[in-house]
Length: 93
Image 1 (cartoon, rainbow, N blue to C red):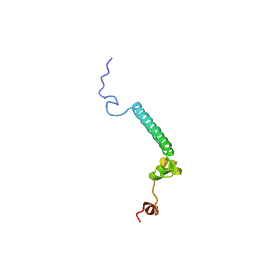
Image 2: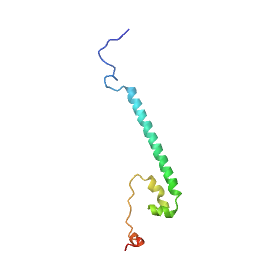
Image 3: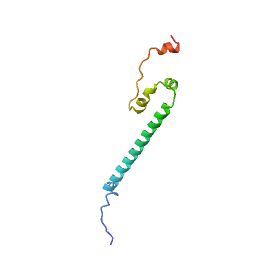
Image 4: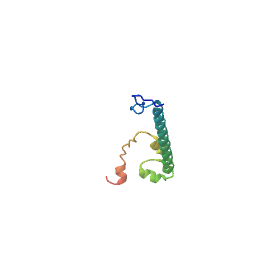
């Protein structure tokens, strides 16, 4: 038997069905979890790499060994404090 109705199904009319909305949300949740995992993993590797550097190299970068974790894991930009002695060390004064 063929149904001859004039109204199209909800998906054809541009209205998402409950199952398609649920699938889209699940996909978005999985993508967000995947991104979060790789962000966490990249930060772990960064801490390991910076920890393997000697203190002189870290000083050249501008961080001390005790700051590695906070620099990598902090969510805000790091503010550099003014160091008045850098002019004397560079020999520009």
